Image (cartoon, rainbow, N blue to C red):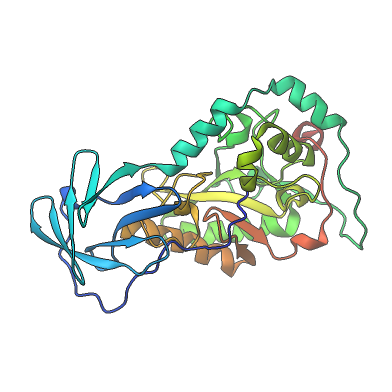
Length: 320
């Protein structure tokens, strides 16, 4: 998935906030987004364990508990918790899950036959490129580190379109990028975390399928096949962390492939623990030569991605 909006953070954490006590369950339950998608209001946990609120594009303001479900807003105002949302300065704002709403809208409008779509995509022609490209040398990430796990969403229906787009679950990267992922996995294992891969090399025809099956109003979230994507070049990887002790995938500020501001790499909302884990992943990947993709915390591009051509081989061809 790709997003084109360039505002990477819905807000920033205010500095100099007074230390707060550990959040009670009722307080932490308020951590969410509210209101309208074009101007969301975010309640989040601060780094020091308090609560704060910000409207999209505005600085955060600390919340102070006055009574159960009632909070004073720093600088003036009041926030009240309700069964279906919050009331901020008298205005009711419904609790929202913008990513789920966008996904549901796309799935309702996608009426593609996956087999027919795939056949048309394989018959399509990728863009012609000129330049001095390095030869493709795609490596199966399963051979890099036995601790790496895989949850390849586009090989099933648990993805934003609800379609099976890959013929089999697999994750391939150009050799230098694959080796860099292996080094990151080693660093993270020492911290108690493993890598779970959601996507890596994506054949160009699948990018074509994304574009063709996605409604025009939602195409800002997918790559234009006329230009290709970094995934097509075998240098982009989508991944998250899992806890080595429990095996559970960790909580991040958003779900994978979520189409909302929560997905931004510098989104200031969510719980403090979620942002900390996002930073752990980011630091490990950047240290090994990957670049952060601003709109998606899970997406990292290997620095040499421009030097590789758009790839068309299917996973079946690569495995063979």
